[in-house]
Image (cartoon, rainbow, N blue to C red; front, top):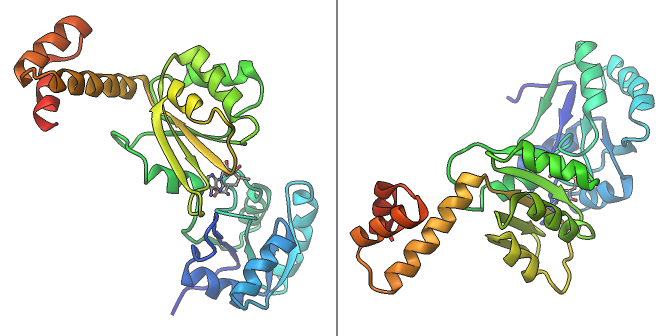
Length: 269
Ligand code: SAM
């Protein structure tokens, strides 16, 4: 039998309506109330899964005033689930205030695993190592974007951005980091899902005619950008008939790459 909690944080799909767990549906059916950002958005999901639970709105503008209502309902023994419009609550979505208040008040809280744009994206792009920094939404100011680029120069960093601002943001990133390697994910789990992994110049060029949909982006650490440059050079020399050993000597001498690393990589290709 599943353990019972007072308050459930429940992820909902980020695009494909089927991306919801059996447990999430079960919890949404069993609780007394569902707190959601936009009742119309959540109601569509509830209708699809024939969930009859009553929902009430809870968003960043009424987060504080809703706390009293939550506490009152919980004190009467009611169970509540929190959802956002899409994905995981509290990942660039409201919920932080209520979770902090309910924790202080001693209520039991649990979060269900589920859909989230940043983790979906990270599990489908090429990466070396596990480390990454998540910025949330990229700040709007040019100076703030430059600061992020400088602060995370040695790390892969991931951010959310709107289609209206992404090209301008990429150009600001380029002004600080040069032709760095990036990955851009668009419309994940939807019909027009697209992943582009390339140098920033080529990504900007790729979206020359405009870009639509929901976007998540990662700027690779400088070390990984160097590696992509190394891979490119190895491929070029291989296509011209150079042997692995020759390639390692050429690239270590001319580009300063580690000779053994180049040799190993060249053998693998
Ligand atoms: N809570 C959500 C999550 O778990 O990912 C994020 C909510 S935030 C308000 C919305 C932003 O997440 C979008 O502007 C976009 O940057 C990103 N996002 C959400 N769904 C996405 C998708 N299907 N593909 C790409 N990015 C997505």
